[in-house]
Length: 185
Length: 165
Image (cartoon, rainbow over all chains, first blue to last red; front, top):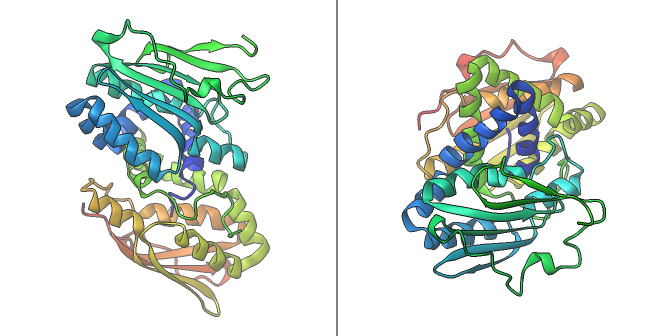
């Protein structure tokens, strides 16, 4: 049986298997169709129907279940996650697992299309070391700049790892809307 | 430290991931058909689970038994016993945690879902000279692991039940 204990390992392995079978477009289709529209359809139902309240409910459950290290903040205008210890990327790092070029892309790969459907855009960065931040706000509020809460993961001493790039998204809903910030920038 | 090749900080996995495994099978079957899905299962057994093959090669049937004991101890909701007989290891799955969770969540389950246990385990076991026979499915089954040299007749897929959601 394929189990859930090491799910993130075979999930990441599957990205590269799909890329070998059908290229990057197939991986992108997988995140949208299999994860967003099928596996995580309950997230879609909550967020499309309830907006920010749905995000609070969905991530409160799933981040606790996965034992993440995170802080969530929200107002009636935005929902934000600052992740300082991603459990799935942490599992991959701990076990030395990397087949696909950027595991972290899978999150915006499925959350992006979901937010587009729900009428939201995303500001997001990840540092490839198990840390990231997300801020979702409605399309009509997209001109408002992202917040800088006290728990902003970017304030941590270990946010910028020597030699590591940071992937950045600005009002995005598509994994291909990435800007890569080089080390030291 | 358990016998699993990849270690998490949590003792038990998150059941929410079961829906992604089912969705992955459906996506691959939709794109590549049944043959493509079987290729995926063969490849994940051969490549991703290579460390398990190496354990079984080094430790024989006792290593097979240890692996499945620790595997199911880390799967939420599993009701499984693992026993060692003279010529095989028997894994009796009274409650398959994945099928139980998918049903609880009212998910449409890929009908050939239970075949993955045969194809993945067979791919893991091949380099170690271990082969599996699966009987039942759709929520409970019996899996027997033999050294290939003394295994009974070949697996038939008819012995593995299709899943009705």
